[in-house]
Length: 357
Image (tube, rainbow, N blue to C red; front, side):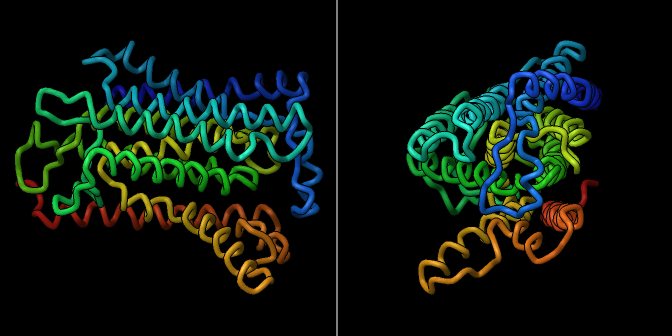
C-alpha cells in the first residue's frame, strides 16, 4: 500500500506545481490552442490558451512511478509497468508532434491522417508484440492472447498474430476516444482520473487475490498487478493535479499530447489486467462520445442530414443551449456512473466464486 500512496503524492505534487510553470513557458513561446471554425462560438474566446499540457501529466506519472520504486524499494519496476509507460509516452509523443504542427502552422489540424495513423500503429503494435513476451517464473506474460472480460475467457483465444491486431484496435480506439472527449475544459482529465481510480482498485484487488499467493477459486492469473496499480495510481493523481488548472475556465489544455497518451494507457491497462471487455463499461463515456461521431457520419452519408447539432455529442448539448459547465458536470456524472457499474460487475464476478474464508 505504501508504494501507491507515495506514487499518488509525488505525481499529484509534480502535476499541480509544474502545470503553472508549463503555462508560463508555453505562453511565452506562443504555444496556443487553435479552435475549430465550425465549433460553438463560445469556444473562440479560448483561442491562444496554452496547449500540450499533457506533457505535464506524462512527466508527473513517470515521476510518481519512479520515486515510489526508489523510496519504497521492493522488486523494482516490472515488465508490465515499463511496457505501460512505454505505451503512455510513445502515444504522448505522437500527440506532441500533432499539437506542435497545429501551433507552427496555426491551424486546428496537425499531423496528416497517414502520419498520425503510422505513429499510433508503430507504438501500438510494438507494445502488443512485447506484451506477449517476458514470461515470469510462472510462465505469465504481461498480456494474454485470450479475450478477457474480468479475467481471460479460456474458450476464446486469438493466437499471437490476431492478438496483436486486436490489441492495436483496442489501443487505437481508446486513445482516439479520449481524444474525441477532450473538447471541454476538464472533461477528459476528470473522466480519465475516474477510470484510472477504478483500475487502481481492480489491479490492487487482483494483487491481493493473485493465484501466486492465494490459490483458490476466483484467484487472478495476472502478472505484476501491484505494479499496474502503481502506474494507475500515478496517472490518476497526475490527472487530478492537472485538472486543478484545466477545470473551467481552463488555463491550459492537455492537447493531443495528453489525450492520446491517457487513452493509450487506459487501453494498455485493460490488456495487461485482462479486462478488455470490462473497459467498454468503465469507459462508457468515451464509448458514447465515439459512437456519436460514428452515428453522425453514418447518418449524414445515408440521408444527407445531421443526427446531432454537432459531434462529438458534448458539442450537441452546447449548441442546444446548455452552459459549458453544465455539460461538463453532467458528463462527469455519466462517467462516474459507468465506472461504478463497471466496478460492480468486477466485484460481482469475483464473489460468484464465493468469498474467501
